[in-house]
Length: 583
Image 1 (tube, rainbow, N blue to C red):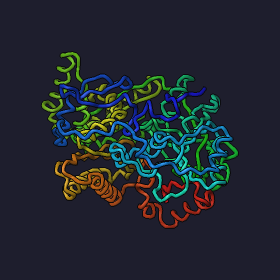
Image 2 (image 1 turned 60 degrees about the vertical axis):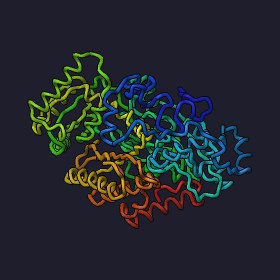
Image 3 (image 1 turned 90 degrees about the horizontal axis):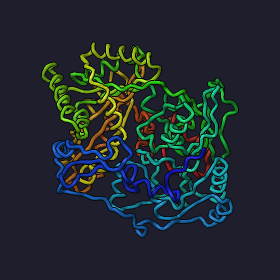
Image 4 (image 1 turned 120 degrees about the vertical axis):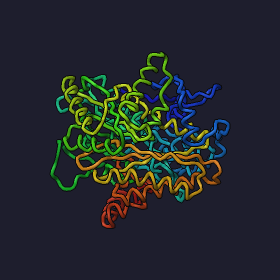
């Protein structure tokens, strides 16, 4: 069954924003009364008024709704570099019948991911080097033909999946003089077969997460792989970046889900001869492919594990008096190996931020109840509203087991001073995951820029890294002349036996700065140095791209980088896949 992406030209431009996150019809704005609302019909927050957001933005960032920095509304083709086309390649491509375009809008749409500097430039209508053309293969064999032609005519190929990268992975190297072809996998979006006996599905790599889950759900199955970007990110992208999803406690990360991969390289197709669950046949070639970030070839088809859909799903939340108690609770849950499908701990700043995003309540009774809950937690229980933090939970599986599991987790939480805070708060916490990127676009309308980055860290360093990185961000902003206090916040998003994934967010009001993006990049660079100095990893699931590759030698050693380089040199001697990621 083929799922057509909702576009007319394969361009993605009607449905998706070209200079911001997500769907064109979905965005935060302030109405004439100065109240925030979220447009469109796609999300639970759509069409709702969010009364607390204005005060939060003004109070947190010193933002002023009178001071606007609107984005360039239209893409002017004349501002885009003319395409450098390889005529011989183009002629042979035409004879294959594979669709292609060198339209400026199609090219710009695929020239970037979602790093702050990329989106900021687009909003100002500034375009650097963009691909010279876009091709849309329809299947594995089309990709083989494209790569063969690229090798024959020395054309540079950059694979493009969902475009959600936050590592500069999709940026075209400005020094590349060859014709650059963006290979867009969006039309390779079918489930080729489902094997119910072995619980596997064979899927084309261009399918995006929400379509994959929807189609599998129709047959009663799921993969359970749900990264925050699952609406738009592709299966091939997950493989290429070694992705992780919020329900990995039950279903595993991408490396646990993948059984078999087909990848087209300049040397030919890589695939194993067997789809067994595990093999002891030397180093696993899948691990060269996973995390290769489009430098070795194009992932075209993936066989992955599927599970019957869970019969029951339940959200939950726990309020802790402080972040330290919350982390101790998550550590104990991990130690007892009883983590629910997802357990995430927000610090105090993020708790307040979540509170500011509460939609307007229709009934007086509900708002009265909310007030009572707050009163109970802060006055009766003595929690300090400036220190408390919240964990959101998601349980999945057999109904009876979920209810037992829930009791076990809440019992552990109680030992660390945690109070159950209801299903609604838990569910809202997960829904916010999908709208948070839209909020960054709103910030940029009012001089506020921000970003998120992640790391994984051993348990005994979690508190240190959270405290030190947040403090470093605040100090760096001060040193770099940022005139308003920044937002510097974190959450623990995934737990393991030996450590956790920590996600940081930071944002600041850049009024008065002549080059805000440069300041922002200096602060982010310092934050990454601080992460590494505190025993954190270079990345937990975003990958390396071009943004973090300067740290690769420190991360995997000189010999490690040499090994990666030799694989690259063997598989792609002419650097056809010349996106310059990783190395």
